[in-house]
Image 1: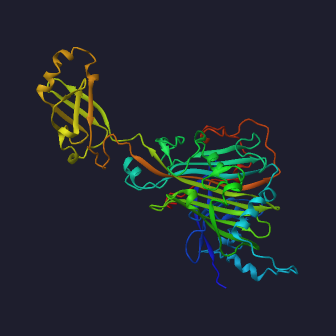
Image 2: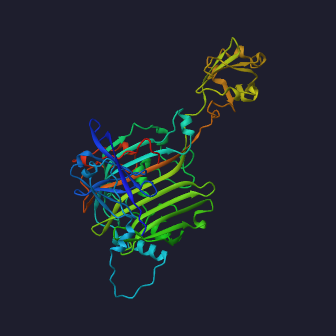
Image 3: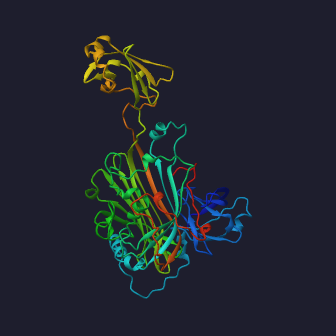
Length: 532
């Protein structure tokens, strides 16, 4: 039997902890598939004795505080692999520690199936999906519970337009990185996640990661029109609260409510909107999972877009363990949005393990090539025009077409346009004397506000980066939101207090709540050199 193996490499680093005044050493690991050398994305890493942990990021990296190294044991799990327990102290004894995880399908060698019942007909994919959806009320908690986890949202440029706009010599990997430790209180799956007053969240820590660029023009709420929008999907503004945009996309938690296109309402539309195909069985330790792939029906998504994904469902109780959904623009195969939701079993109920949602969006940037000011010199019949960027000299011609100046609607004849100095951002524009006489300027200048009657129509000229004047560049970005559960609290009631996160305002406007034992929860920042 062919076996797929993982290995974990550790590297020591030092990063900030939750308290800004303190630092705490951490050990950095990476989970990688040994055969393909690719990262094991979002692998779950739990500290065994305290049932608290973290997750690998998109590049397979995760970090553990050194205070747990001496006596701690971690459990690493991921769908498709057998869970492995590792004593952290044993890793330090090896110069190049590699820990192998066997692919979980060897569980068939260990599981003895005893049954005297007649073999049942194999279920069709649509039947499995229907059973899974119908069993959500049984498999997921309808009682109050909470979970504490690490949250982050950030953006990544799709191309180099943003790099040129901010005149960066290096490619931009991350923008607007915000991180937090949050406790989410959920009164159960039979309640509305956003509308119910019993479903609230507390913000224990919030950090703007200053290692990365902060640009407030890109964090405005979606208007779904011209300032910030995605052509393929309507993004609910929610006052700029990215956490609750993330919560809205949890199609499993919101199975009887609208989530995202084209899952729509999971229990009503998901099956009708897609074609399904059963793939090979997948294992999580001894749990056997159906792996079902799906594609969207063109008549449901239009012929411009296509969706595809995978859903993992337990064979024994039809619990949905994982849902991955991706929407693409067919013409250039560019991704429009992606959702990954994973749940994990605890005491016969399924609780959130992690959720990620990223979408493509465009925004109009206020930092565009334009005129800063223009000053008229009556002695020389000329204007001194100040641009906010260096001008590409070869874009000035033809001058009479590109430079049009009016006084009270009457066009003035432009003769020349010359650079005032070596900066190539200040230019002298000379006006024909007859044009000045035709507007009776000698009389007009007696009005103290005469300069307000000049208007400029300057077109076609470009800055040195190729951006045309007055064109507000459309910045193309991917917006990421991610929440990774670090600890689950069953049967936990919502506390009596008022400092809950405002569901319709950005997180930075929320009040921080002091957290006891805060050293037990830590941020797992994206790494600057590894681009997702």
